[in-house]
Length: 118
Image (cartoon, rainbow, N blue to C red; front, side, top):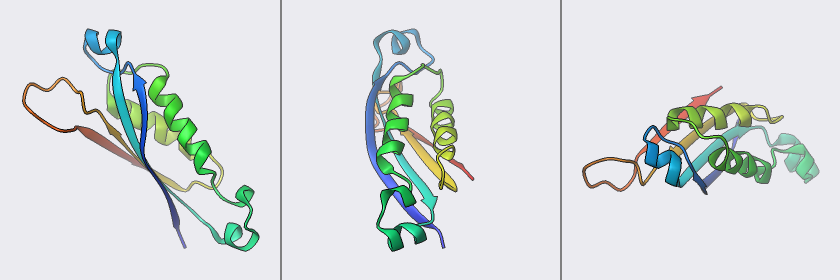
């Protein structure tokens, strides 16, 4: 059985982007995260040590958003997914990076990319 932990709207200010002003001025990014795991031990023990700690996941995501800049949000999504897979108990991860202030010349609400890793 595969169980899921979902965290939406983890937000931070980062300097990711291809354009000079994105790297200089920065902007707000938001990330949604879904990990699959197995809750069997945790539901029996009722102990956080027997599950994936979602606070730790959120900290990993936030650190990537505010951390070392990358050109592409695709790379940022992959970095987050890879880091989350390093957590014991995580079997798959889906990361969606939102860039609502992307340099697009037509009206839009949001642009996002998603990356899933086993």
